[in-house]
Length: 339
Image 1 (cartoon, one colour):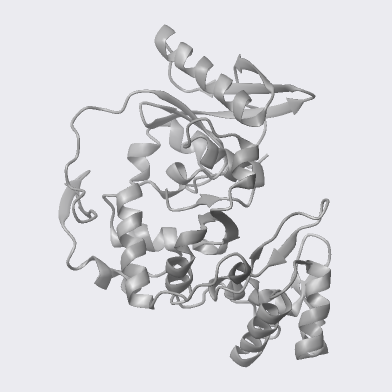
Image 2 (cartoon, helix red, strand yellow):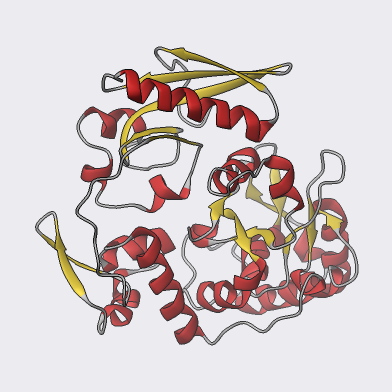
């Protein structure tokens, strides 16, 4: 798994815990081998601390896209100033957004404080356009919560490192992506990384090829022994789980009714997924009430007795991960995407 999406903290922790035998939310939260920072597509991920040299080298090599409109956009020089200021401000202590704002402004100027970025409540300060750039440069990550407040930290305080050279980092990241999600195409890798197919195509040139769904695909070196036996089992994956977000072709992973029900116009991750034999077969929702976890599963295909027992076991595992007593209901999920 190339990182776990952590924009929704509980979902990210569950994604990791579901893959580690005997793990729960608490062990994931205490895992000093993980760091919460900005990963692929500029979204918050849980990433292995050992892999930060690769991630920072690869992500900082991707040309910026999704820039703010010209009137409020920071200049390259301003971005560089803010990145240096962030690294210095976080070098010795964890800071909340408001505290970091004061430190950045003190080191750069009042222009960094100007509210410019549209947000949920008003507008964010101008310097915050560079938060993900600072993360890609390796000088910012998430720190421990301070009550309900998010803090930022400098990952070099956890372990000093140097970003890997860009070409080596992108090659390594591509191989890991293909090992996790492949076989795949340059277009699929580019979409996952939020890069352009033109940029990533050269990294595919020497890789072995195969055919999948009448399409030429590439796979990681030494990973061409594809088993003929189908996958067997039932799984419940949380919001933005890496398997649903990173796997293609979508028409094979989300067949028939699953594409319309379990994606948001083709975008995966907005619904927790029910997997049957590795294929999306429904959606689910959880609601915690006291010490009880109420789980509703909407299956798009019939569940025979064996699969129902496997589903029961999966719900019990969710309860163990979250430290609550689970309750399962089979029926329609009435909440919307990302609810």
